[in-house]
Length: 100
Image 1 (tube, rainbow, N blue to C red):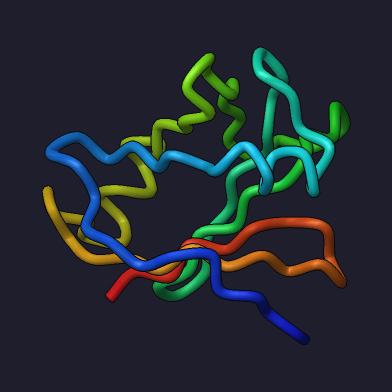
Image 2 (cartoon, rainbow, N blue to C red):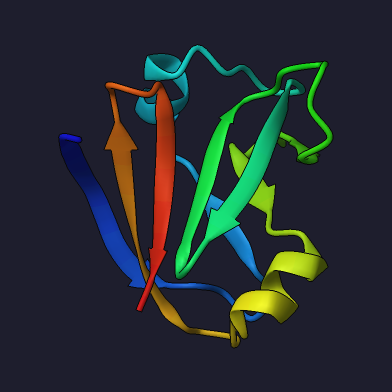
């Protein structure tokens, strides 16, 4: 799997990830569309929503942000201002949030 690092920074007080417009364009995700959010270990995966899945779904806001579901925040023990890195996984057409 080849990943392209987009950025590293701390989360805001509330667990929200701001996606660069260029990343949304690359993933063909527009404002108002739903994305599937899944997780494994310390990684959160965001990809265009598939209507047949039961994954957590969130809408892309006008600021290209995505709220991380409370279930994932609790499970991964995500804290306010926790550092993370955002990656583009072109092979699987998704982005990956790696918590530090």
